[in-house]
Image 1 (tube, rainbow, N blue to C red):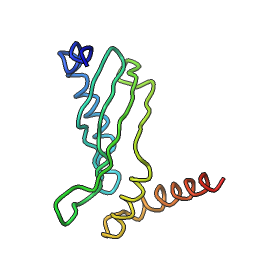
Image 2: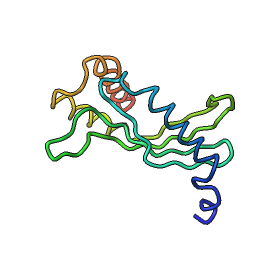
Image 3: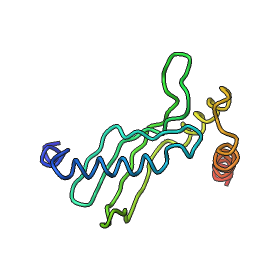
Image 4: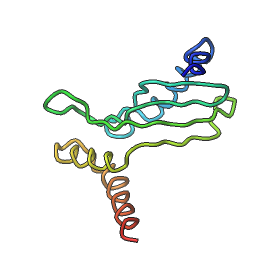
Length: 130
């Protein structure tokens, strides 16, 4: 962690991370049936970015908590406002269960269910049966 202190949230890197987060979040916001993708934390060193985010579904549970799955992205900034690499890591089983929970609550969009949830579940089952 000592190395982290040298570059964590400093100067221009902090501004770059805010811009990066704003671009990524607003690019997805509103087009996925009420989902949002808040960035909880991030770190930048050179052209490498690591972000901790949540994949937050629409609405809230009866107890007030969000429907969400945590994830991490490893990103390489390629210059000129573009990324040259991105890998997103999250627990797909948790995400599928979350989508089931949203569906049971009547909050999962039919389009998302048809175009992503059902095909993803079919691929996962096929992989497990192979």
